[in-house]
Amino acid sequence: MINEVYPGIFRITEKGALGLLKPPVNIYVVPGTDGIVFDAGYGNRNAVRKFCKEFGSIKEQCRREGRSFSVSRVLLSHAHPDHFAGLRGFRGSLGLRTMMTKRSFEMIASKERYRASYHTGDDWWEMAYPSVMQRNMMNLLRQPINRYYEHLYGTSFPAAPDIVIEENCSIPVNGESWQVLHVPGHAEDHIALYDPLRGILFAGDNIMRAMTTWLGPPKSDLAAYITSLKRMRDLPGLNLVLSAHGSPVTDPVERIQELIDIRMKRTEQVLEMITAKGGEGIMFRDLLDSLYPGAGWIKHRAAEGWVQTTLQFLMKTEQVELVKYGRMISFRTR
Figure 1 (cartoon, one colour):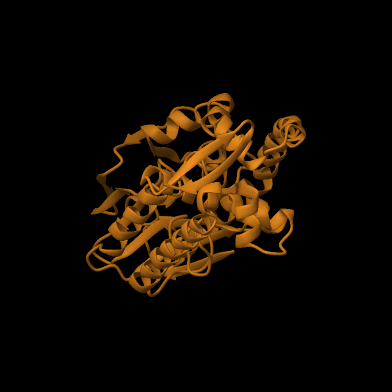
Figure 2: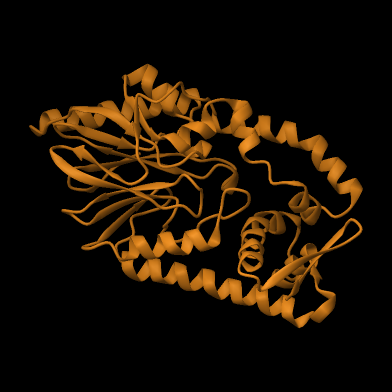
């Protein structure tokens, strides 16, 4: 689906499937004398073919209206598969040159490197699945789950990028200087793209109008995310955020502050629950039960990431400590 969300900026939304397992994702096309595509979406054959068709429709619309259409680059926001999976197809079908940071490419240079980069470590694995039976079962399922997601997203791993950019720099777009901002938190390599003349921020997954950003180990960092939100909130002249999922954010300063408040409130809630348990502490699963009373396994799985990331933050700031009792892990205040 094509939508000109702002004069001269088109959004192509690729359809999702299976709810949050494969959400709809936005790709932005900025035509002009030296235009750009922001993000690459899914890599399934149908997804790439539909994107190419809609890309051609935008080109034809610009031709009819006497607007320039020279678009030869695609810029990656971060190395999650709903953003990079289409890169190989875009290059092969449209000849688009790939742009990304060195950090992003190091994560997606191969399937093996990508999978290894998301290993969470034994402590967090034991914390999420405290029984030996649970861990053995999840170990057996890990490879099939990886293959399922890679098939679902059409994940392919691109060759070396045509253009490597710095994490904080300026790039030319249609004769103007746009700012690349390193905004980690959701992902350590996440960048955003800012058009300072119009106050438009291509925010990737960092800011969404109706959802909160997924956070989870090992690549998410709550402190970095809050810092990044504040950096984006304070951009001079910010008036529109274009997100990777959902509709445009037309009240960006207010929405970003709301996201900061939500994360801080959630952090306080987790700390209060741990404090209430005193010296005995609380196990991770019991903490999830307290945060989501009556919720089932699926809801817990969806919430695991942000809770783990919050616990990491509380441990880094020395408010909470991890305690092991044999194979059991609990958390208590210092």
